[in-house]
Image 1 (spheres, helix red, strand yellow):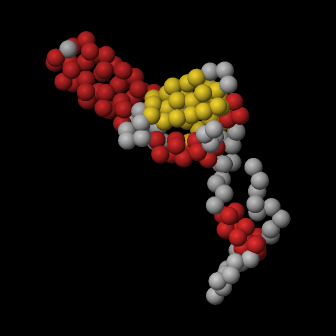
Image 2 (tube, one colour):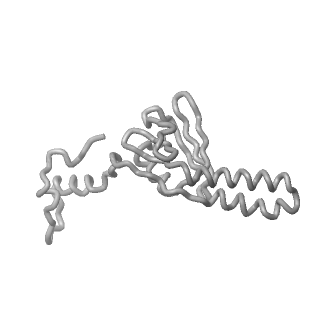
Length: 158
Protein backbone atom coordinates (compact mmCIF):
# COMPACT_ATOMS: atom_id res chain seq x y z
CA UNK A 1 0.00 0.00 0.00
CA UNK A 2 1.31 3.44 -0.88
CA UNK A 3 1.27 6.10 1.83
CA UNK A 4 0.24 9.29 0.06
CA UNK A 5 1.49 11.38 2.99
CA UNK A 6 5.06 10.26 2.38
CA UNK A 7 7.30 13.23 1.73
CA UNK A 8 4.98 15.79 3.37
CA UNK A 9 5.81 17.35 6.72
CA UNK A 10 3.26 17.71 9.53
CA UNK A 11 2.96 21.48 9.15
CA UNK A 12 1.88 21.04 5.52
CA UNK A 13 -0.76 18.52 6.54
CA UNK A 14 -2.21 20.90 9.13
CA UNK A 15 -2.17 23.97 6.88
CA UNK A 16 -5.61 25.55 6.72
CA UNK A 17 -6.99 26.67 3.37
CA UNK A 18 -8.55 30.11 3.72
CA UNK A 19 -10.63 31.94 1.10
CA UNK A 20 -9.33 29.83 -1.77
CA UNK A 21 -11.41 28.25 -4.49
CA UNK A 22 -8.50 26.79 -6.44
CA UNK A 23 -6.82 23.65 -5.14
CA UNK A 24 -3.18 22.95 -5.84
CA UNK A 25 -1.79 19.48 -6.49
CA UNK A 26 -0.43 19.32 -2.91
CA UNK A 27 -3.82 20.20 -1.39
CA UNK A 28 -5.53 17.47 -3.39
CA UNK A 29 -3.02 14.93 -2.12
CA UNK A 30 -3.68 16.05 1.44
CA UNK A 31 -7.41 15.48 1.02
CA UNK A 32 -6.84 12.05 -0.49
CA UNK A 33 -4.39 11.04 2.23
CA UNK A 34 -6.88 11.89 4.96
CA UNK A 35 -9.33 9.36 3.52
CA UNK A 36 -6.83 6.46 3.56
CA UNK A 37 -8.08 3.95 6.20
CA UNK A 38 -5.82 2.95 9.04
CA UNK A 39 -5.41 -0.77 8.40
CA UNK A 40 -2.50 -1.19 10.79
CA UNK A 41 -4.55 -0.78 13.97
CA UNK A 42 -5.84 -3.94 15.64
CA UNK A 43 -9.64 -4.03 15.83
CA UNK A 44 -11.50 -6.36 18.18
CA UNK A 45 -15.14 -6.99 17.30
CA UNK A 46 -17.88 -6.68 19.92
CA UNK A 47 -20.07 -9.76 20.38
CA UNK A 48 -23.60 -9.82 18.93
CA UNK A 49 -26.15 -12.07 20.61
CA UNK A 50 -28.84 -11.72 17.91
CA UNK A 51 -28.64 -15.25 16.47
CA UNK A 52 -28.38 -17.11 19.81
CA UNK A 53 -31.29 -15.15 21.30
CA UNK A 54 -33.50 -15.75 18.25
CA UNK A 55 -32.75 -19.49 18.37
CA UNK A 56 -33.48 -19.77 22.10
CA UNK A 57 -36.70 -17.76 21.77
CA UNK A 58 -37.80 -19.89 18.79
CA UNK A 59 -37.12 -23.01 20.85
CA UNK A 60 -39.71 -22.10 23.50
CA UNK A 61 -42.86 -22.64 21.38
CA UNK A 62 -41.17 -25.51 19.52
CA UNK A 63 -40.68 -27.32 22.84
CA UNK A 64 -44.47 -27.43 23.21
CA UNK A 65 -45.14 -28.70 19.68
CA UNK A 66 -42.02 -30.77 18.89
CA UNK A 67 -39.92 -31.30 22.04
CA UNK A 68 -36.96 -32.83 20.18
CA UNK A 69 -36.79 -30.04 17.60
CA UNK A 70 -37.26 -27.38 20.29
CA UNK A 71 -34.54 -29.01 22.37
CA UNK A 72 -32.11 -28.98 19.43
CA UNK A 73 -32.85 -25.29 18.77
CA UNK A 74 -32.37 -24.44 22.45
CA UNK A 75 -29.11 -26.34 22.79
CA UNK A 76 -27.72 -24.88 19.57
CA UNK A 77 -28.75 -21.36 20.64
CA UNK A 78 -27.09 -21.81 24.05
CA UNK A 79 -23.96 -23.20 22.37
CA UNK A 80 -23.76 -20.12 20.10
CA UNK A 81 -24.35 -17.87 23.13
CA UNK A 82 -21.40 -19.54 24.88
CA UNK A 83 -19.26 -19.03 21.76
CA UNK A 84 -20.22 -15.34 21.53
CA UNK A 85 -19.28 -14.84 25.19
CA UNK A 86 -15.95 -16.68 25.11
CA UNK A 87 -14.55 -16.01 21.61
CA UNK A 88 -12.87 -12.80 20.46
CA UNK A 89 -12.23 -11.87 16.85
CA UNK A 90 -9.40 -9.49 16.04
CA UNK A 91 -8.36 -7.89 12.78
CA UNK A 92 -4.65 -7.07 12.80
CA UNK A 93 -2.59 -5.47 10.05
CA UNK A 94 -1.84 -8.87 8.46
CA UNK A 95 -4.19 -11.47 9.97
CA UNK A 96 -7.69 -12.34 11.13
CA UNK A 97 -7.24 -13.88 14.62
CA UNK A 98 -9.63 -15.89 16.78
CA UNK A 99 -9.02 -16.00 20.54
CA UNK A 100 -10.63 -17.89 23.40
CA UNK A 101 -9.77 -15.79 26.42
CA UNK A 102 -6.12 -14.86 25.98
CA UNK A 103 -5.23 -17.96 23.95
CA UNK A 104 -4.90 -17.66 20.17
CA UNK A 105 -6.96 -20.46 18.61
CA UNK A 106 -6.51 -19.75 14.92
CA UNK A 107 -4.81 -17.23 12.66
CA UNK A 108 -5.92 -16.56 9.08
CA UNK A 109 -3.39 -14.45 7.09
CA UNK A 110 -5.11 -12.09 4.61
CA UNK A 111 -2.56 -12.95 1.92
CA UNK A 112 -4.09 -16.45 1.70
CA UNK A 113 -7.68 -15.20 1.30
CA UNK A 114 -9.31 -15.51 -2.09
CA UNK A 115 -12.87 -14.34 -1.38
CA UNK A 116 -15.30 -13.51 1.41
CA UNK A 117 -19.02 -12.82 1.72
CA UNK A 118 -21.58 -12.06 4.42
CA UNK A 119 -25.02 -13.68 4.03
CA UNK A 120 -27.73 -11.93 4.22
CA UNK A 121 -27.63 -8.15 4.22
CA UNK A 122 -30.96 -7.60 6.01
CA UNK A 123 -30.18 -10.01 8.85
CA UNK A 124 -26.58 -11.23 8.58
CA UNK A 125 -26.27 -14.76 9.91
CA UNK A 126 -23.32 -16.33 8.10
CA UNK A 127 -19.78 -15.23 7.26
CA UNK A 128 -18.03 -17.15 4.49
CA UNK A 129 -14.41 -16.83 3.43
CA UNK A 130 -12.20 -18.89 1.18
CA UNK A 131 -8.50 -19.34 1.62
CA UNK A 132 -6.12 -20.91 -0.85
CA UNK A 133 -6.58 -24.40 0.62
CA UNK A 134 -9.81 -24.22 2.63
CA UNK A 135 -13.30 -22.78 2.96
CA UNK A 136 -14.75 -21.44 6.22
CA UNK A 137 -18.31 -20.72 7.35
CA UNK A 138 -18.80 -18.87 10.64
CA UNK A 139 -22.05 -17.76 12.27
CA UNK A 140 -22.18 -14.00 12.78
CA UNK A 141 -21.70 -13.80 16.54
CA UNK A 142 -20.06 -10.38 16.35
CA UNK A 143 -21.00 -6.89 15.23
CA UNK A 144 -21.82 -7.41 11.52
CA UNK A 145 -21.22 -3.78 10.51
CA UNK A 146 -17.77 -3.69 12.11
CA UNK A 147 -17.00 -7.10 10.58
CA UNK A 148 -17.90 -5.88 7.09
CA UNK A 149 -15.99 -2.63 7.54
CA UNK A 150 -12.83 -4.43 8.67
CA UNK A 151 -13.09 -6.92 5.82
CA UNK A 152 -13.49 -4.18 3.22
CA UNK A 153 -10.47 -2.30 4.57
CA UNK A 154 -8.10 -5.21 5.04
CA UNK A 155 -9.16 -7.76 2.46
CA UNK A 156 -11.05 -6.21 -0.48
CA UNK A 157 -13.08 -8.65 -2.56
CA UNK A 158 -11.59 -9.88 -5.79
